[in-house]
Length: 382
Ligand SMILES: [Mg+2]
Image 1 (cartoon, rainbow, N blue to C red):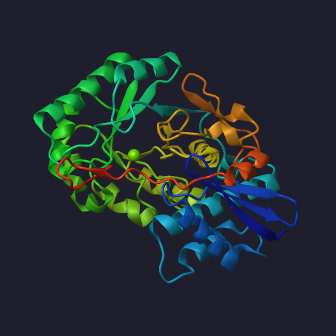
Image 2: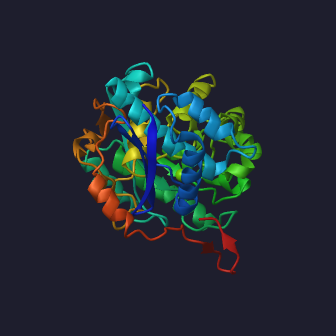
């Protein structure tokens, strides 16, 4: 079997899919994207495919991964690692179809029968938290995630801290003691500000607090984990085992590699294994599309230290299109009491609606995240 063609499709709301075709008729799909830099990743995919994949045997996944990540003197980072991630997903999809098995079966077989998922509430500037959490509880979810704050000073005021605590209290009240909520800091506070905000959250026992500091301050993250009882999570902006290691050394409780950013199934599988040696759980980041979620689920079902899965259905970023718009078999992504069931189809376990994807590619505008400003006009973290 040889790879004959690699195509990419930019689709709303902000995703990029790749399709690897072989001379056997088998086709694999993946999702190589960095939110806000889809066009840049698209170029990287085209370059990597032309240099390493066209004409090659798709079943030599590890060798392709080694070449694609190390075959250029300059390596790593979000763009290249995400391009590799999507291509790696598509190669695993082909392998599963070639061997007639879901990817998690090829990676050791299932270790659970269902995967817990959470949904987002509250938006970029969180509001109406109580109502939105109650609605998700009514829909069967047992866990939600929200932003800790909206646009904020790096050192939060007393009023800002009170608002962080009030939203946490509202979420806890709507969930009761058996439910879980997580808070995403988005790196909006300084290290000192994050420590204060975590203290405000402690009485409400969040499941974890995500990116309390920006990934470029991972060398300071140990101060944060030492200062709080809230489990600290990070990892959506880390792209390899070597990127994740300093976060583990800093004492995080949860790592959140993204199957579409951190080198695909091949590397995230290894990140999960590395995390296991630090007694750290894995909660894959995934505010993305159906192929990223399908790859995440394949990982969830063969990974003992999997904790919970993010997913984008109904997320505030999804305007104009939803994850389900691009798949034929929507049952794979149906929630059962806040859980997704083990996919049994070969490869990634989803059937892409190819006509919908090709049509969407012709009408996609570039998506970029907002650029925020403080009231004094200076740059603010989004
Ligand atoms: Mg996040």
